[in-house]
Length: 171
Image (tube, rainbow, N blue to C red; front, side, top):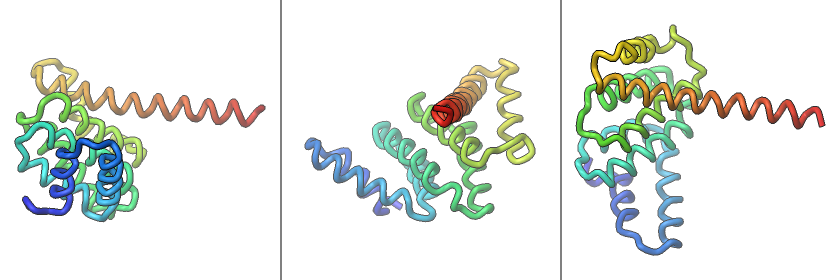
């Protein structure tokens, strides 16, 4: 997995000092995250990565990959992605700093937003949010609040967009 094309391009990205090269490399990475399976590859890379700057970049790309690919995934891929992201990377991992953890929680928010999920479709998520609000475990509470914040931000953006659309349609 060390020489996977996404990781190779990530390493190149971190070494670039020129703005034009950064833009070009960003396009390369953006194209790679559109490919089928890229979300799971990024999570696998994240599993094996100890360098914080790479973790940040991978978690940011993961969020973009989910936004671009989630609706096209098979139901099995969606389930695997949701479980891996929620349980392995958010709940049971202690190796990520808050900046990476927040991006991972934003990825959960993106899934909820894209799939228009309700409690029946992802009961584990809602159970985790409820348990986090019991305030018995500081770490679990923090992670639950990060997820909830992400979901609420996206829902607020959706409401504002709908109101703007309605307002401008009446002009």
